Image: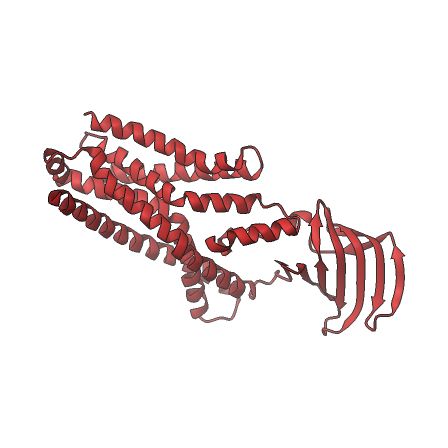
Length: 363
């Protein structure tokens, strides 16, 4: 019992040390990569270097969170390779430990890390990425529009050379905005006209409004009950429904409330449902990565050099990333059931890893 506790403590300590070192390397590389990208973005702007640095600091945690499963894969390969080449693995096996028992502690540790990342780190990254988008968005030349979904309805702000408009709608249904109010302002911010419509067909950017009433700034009716009124917008149905294209801004703790809000406004919640399931699957995704790393090291008896394992880690990361995203896309487009799209890649990795571990344990 004491021996098991000492060995388990040693395994945990060594693995955590390797994960921390790998995280530091990835964090520094990610920061430099993002910083160069931000500097390139601000080349045409008269800003100091502190703006790109601040934006890089805000963005990197979100990037780091998305890369963490592959950090675990590389850390696992590094750790198992270390104990294998230092003959610590042989010593553990001589003492009566199987390959499976050696993997248990890293597996439990990655599940704990996954839970901490989802419940604590993810809410932090969502706040940072929201701040990042707000700051960077204020510098984007072509960002003359803004849209938001709130408990009070759908709000859209548009700006062009002749006027500024604010659009409010109660909900979206199929290709229509319902109970539409359009407030028109001139370039000086002076309100001059209001358009009320029962509905607006937004299949294209040339909206077709039904049962329209037009009023001036004082509330006097200019025209009523118009059935053929057209409004030129920067939005169409596709653009409005992609308001949540960056799901990294949504915290794990807010996903369910966002799903409820989108349902009330008539939006598709499929992407948000996939985000929820991927968040719940995150600890198991990390576990599958540590199991996969054990197969590539403990299950191989040949004396490969370190570069072979680097190559294996890179190729595996690319394949897993592609497979995981491809499956998610099938789920978003309704080609696969939502749960199947999210959990299928993890299940396949688990099956492959389990077979590999059993095979290695019989050697």
